[in-house]
Image (tube, rainbow, N blue to C red; front, top):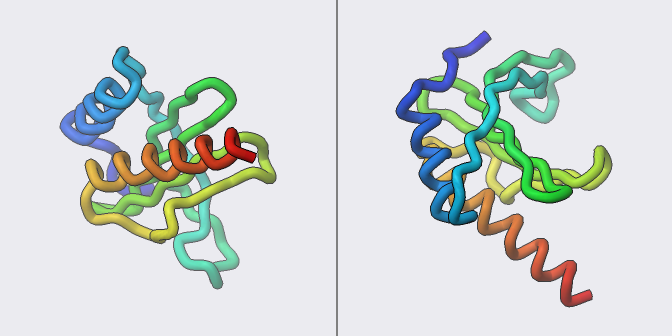
Length: 111
């Protein structure tokens, strides 16, 4: 498995969530299996940070040193990314994930 999240990286996400929600929402450490590339047949196990807000679930996966991927989902078939496969900055990854989800939620409320 790749390198785990450092305490500084967890702090970055915790601070971002505190700013977004106005309360402490510590992410949980988890392991996920994913395809590193769309044409991969094998799944790779990677560390992840996971949290929930209502019925929405969020995941940030650590692919390697300064390499992150994120998504949010509601049910198994309602999975959404940010439009970008990989980030080299965790803060930007977390902020973009939260913004895309907020935009999605606002769009759904308008329908």
